[in-house]
Image (cartoon, rainbow, N blue to C red; front, top):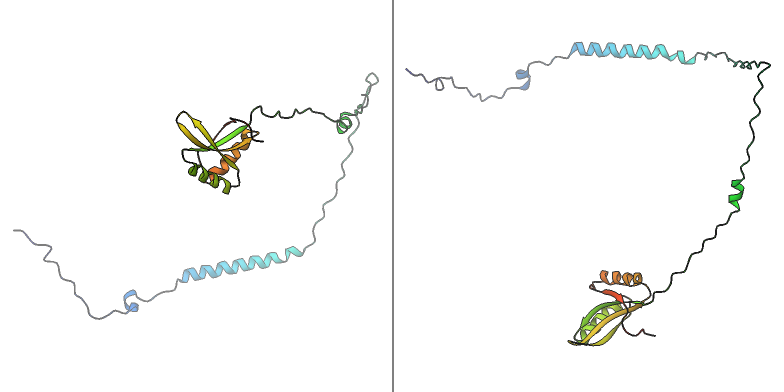
Length: 195
């Protein structure tokens, strides 16, 4: 026959009264052994400090000063000759370098045969070219609009320059890039040079 072990357990009683913490935990005891050991340790440390406090006032013991004894000179025999004195060398290159001048011939950069130009736009309408020219003028650069007759009709090109060196044109190109004017191309000057 099967037994029900779970149902046969006695039910726990709930008490309605609150227990006081002193009754549940029991009386608290002071750790007497720990207090005795701490007291002994502190008193021993105090005695140690008291015993070494007087030793600092004693006079310092002076050590005797020992003078080094001179080394005996090596004996030379009659057949051996003493070494000659070390020769004194005089370096004169320091004085020569102080007064030395070096001349270097640096050739001047030859001017480029053909100057450079930068084209920032090519438009069918004159109004668009003038608008771009105004945007470039707001950046502090001077540009010009050229009217070019090509195979496919009339074009209006916005051009900056002439520049003596390509690096100068690249500097202006970077300035225009920061302002939002992109696609500027640099190549050698085409057409007559402005006066």
